[in-house]
Amino acid sequence: MKVGVTVNGTAQEHDVEPRTLLVHYLREDCGLTGTKVGCDTSSCGACTVLVDGESVKSCTMLAVQADGATATTIEGLANGEAMHPVQQAFHEHHGLQCGYCTAGMVMAAVSLLEETPDPSERDVRIGIEGNLCRCTGYHNIVESVLAAAEQMRTQPR
Amino acid sequence: MIPAAFDYVRAESAEDAVAQLAEHGDEAKLLAGGMSLLPLMKLRLATPAVLVDVGRVSELSYVRDAGDHVAIGALTRHRDVETNDVLSRECGVLRAVASQVGDNQVRHRGTIGGSIAHGDPASDLPAALLALDATFVAQGPAGTREIAASEFFQGFLETALAPDELLCEIRVPKTGADGFAFEKFSRRAQDFATVGVVAVRTSAATHVGLINMGSTPLRATAVERALAQGATAADAAARAADGTEPSADLNASVEYREHLARVLVRRALGAI
Image (cartoon, rainbow over all chains, first blue to last red):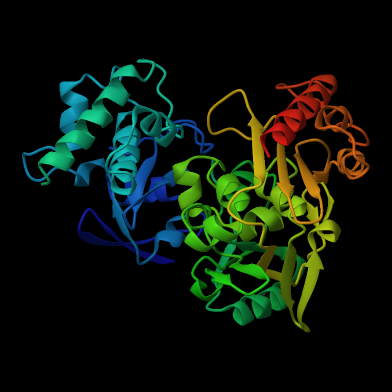
């Protein structure tokens, strides 16, 4: 069936089976491979994207459920050459090692900061509990999210 | 992992959903947020021939102050329960429990009705609503009927809902902003409770719900009875595992779950 989603500001329409997962729609039909498939069981959060501005695990959502919605993936965050403050903060604070969790971690953080613009460290740790990182132990990730929050509060884009 | 193929139907209203269920019979499953159903379908533990998507039936997403109770539309998302002012004021326990379901991503999609209709004894909300003496409203071809929470959970993932019925509303008594405790023990962030306890003090009594202590969500009836007879919290909590039949899994043995139930009930009773 035809599924239309506005992805990163661009209207997409693809003919897919109803059982197509959103993550496969984004990666295989839209060609946006920044979103990763990790555990594929809605535990690890590597597949996190925004649907209508809120974080979701795209491995546990059907593409048809996003029909008519707006989706944002990691590819849609930067403004031209200027990285999103969360991306910039992950870069500056070394919030990644192997990078596999990073796209999902950044998208989860963007959604978290939308809902909680001035989070405590505990808010951040709880806010990203749906995203697993097997390299860094979260220390620099939490630093990155806190730094991004500060940046976004003081210098809105 | 990809679900087995199915036909997809989008319901436009509650009536439409009920009509679709009537048309497709036992082969059909309702899809709300999909947080429980889609993982089962990906593992092919569930292979419905038809999915009736009620996710866009916005008329079933609401929280209303209904006088002596709060009425919650079945499609209200956990996130909306977690942030709702009426619930925060009139039934704080539900807000607190919803805020610990899964993680942010799950709470953005998952719905209270979906969690109840799934009937998982390891889920937080079914035991909370059981402790609250909630009432569920189901809509079927013959109209609506009310089902008491105490009659609703009948077996592992089995509820009193008929295959042609849609859960449309949850009614919770007003218990106020506080007077409750929620103790959830799990070894990993975002995980289901190894064991959980919801304690609510109402005007008449203290109710205690148990998460993951049997094939259905349970009330700790021995604890409640002991409290009603004047037992101390510590003595009552010692009865927390009485009459329960928890299962053993990788996270906990039967004995460990029974121990957790006693400890968590003691903590919960101490906190309210």
